[in-house]
Every structure is written in structure tokens, then in C-alpha cells.
Image (cartoon, rainbow, N blue to C red; front, side, top):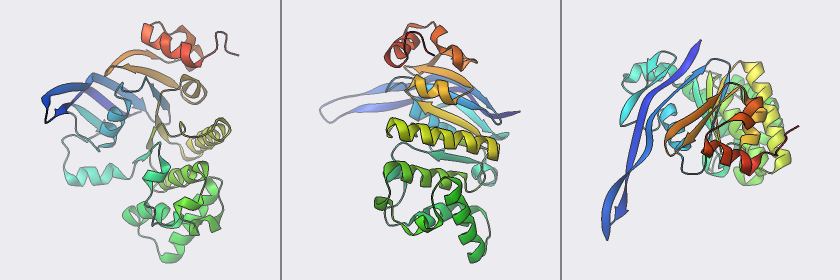
Amino acid sequence: MRLLTLERIRKSYRRGGVFRRRERVDALSGVSLALDERTCLGLVGPSGAGKSTLGRIALGLERPDIGTVRFMGCDLTNGDGKDLRAVRRHLQAVFQDCFQSINPRFKASEAIGEPLRNFERLSSRKLRLRIGELLEMVGLKEEDGSKYPHQFSGGELQRVCIARAVAPKPRLIVLDEAVSGLDVLVQAQVLDLLSWLQQELKMAFLFISHDLRVIRRFCDRVAVLHFGRIIETSDEVTALDQLSHPASKALLKAVLPASPA
């Protein structure tokens, strides 16, 4: 079943300053994508390709200049507040910089509990129990809920962010470079956690990355974004070395061995 649809998305920004003429820069130029339930779509491309812009538009954090975003049948670009409220809990995100994603004054339990307080009516006891379950679900301990962000390592704090994202039981999580700031071993552990959560909670992921190695390990399908356009897609992530566009080959050459095992 189709979960998320982005149709002919266009987005531009103005750049320039006091001493030079402001010019329009096209971040996205007619991008169309679709994501089904319980699948993982990898969106890959070099820095500046427009990946994060597309992710923010998919989340409803930015509006496209032209185009439509539909999630669970709701038009996120033109829907009214009531419709958006109904689907908001089902659309969550995990970003690259976990230290910027959580208020430094919040304990982990407060950060994880925030979406629960927004979307569910739980007693104090049930809220505390649910937060403890979520911490354990992502490989942390219940007592870690009393820690502040600076008391965690990067990998641990990203697990807190993941716990916060899955707390309202969403149907889709946008992961924007969610493992790129972690070392290789911690990356692998977090990817294993995400794979398990996807199967356990029956979620879909839009996984944004510049690293085709991570995409090949984690995703079901891949779309390559280059200068604001989808230049190539593949339904077989095990065959990424067969991508044919020159920009795709450049990404492959940068991160994949000539004969992957």
C-alpha cells in the first residue's frame, strides 16, 4: 500500500547579500518519489544534491514552491490543520546531529516523553513505564532516562533520538544522515537496531545518505538525487554496481569496492 507520495516537487532559494545581486538557486527540480508501507527507500546523492531539502518537505517542515506531498492519503501541502494533526504522529524523523536534535536542558526521559505527551493521554505511571520500555528497546537502560544529552556518547544519544521517534508508533520515519556522524562499528550497531525496529514495529523508512555502502546494507530500493533531480532508481540494492548514470558511477567509485562481496 502506498504510504508517501511526492509529486513534481520544486523548491528554490534566494542567495546573495548586500554587495551582490540575489540569485535564485533551484534545490529541487520536479522530483517525484513514492514509498510503500513497511519498506525502506534509500535517497542517495552528493552534498548539495537536495536530499535534506526533500526530507524536510516530506516531513512537512518546509513547503514546496510547486508540487504535492501526500502521506496516508492526506495532502500535507494543502490540507487543513485537523487533517495534518491526524497524521502528524505517524511521521517522525531522526537527524544527523543528535546533540542539536535534543534540548540540552532535557533529560533523556523528557525528550522521549515529549511525543507521548503530545499524542497520547497517559498517566504519570504509564508514561514512566513506557519511557523505560523505549529506552530498553533501543539498547539503553531505564536509568539512562535521568541523564542529560552531554552525558551520552554520540551513538547512545542517537539511540535516544530513535526512541523518541518510535515513541508515538509512527508508520514512517525519515532518517536524514542518521548514522553518518558515527564511527563504523557504532554505525553497524545502529543500523542493526533500525532493521530490527522496522520489522518489529512494521514501519517504513526514508533513509537519506551520501554513502552507498550504508544504502546497500539497509534499504530495499534506492533513488539517486543529483542537482535537484532524480537521475536513476533501482529496485535491487544488491546490484548497485550496475547503476549507469555518470553521477551514480562517481558515487559508486567513491565508496564501493570494484568487486563487492
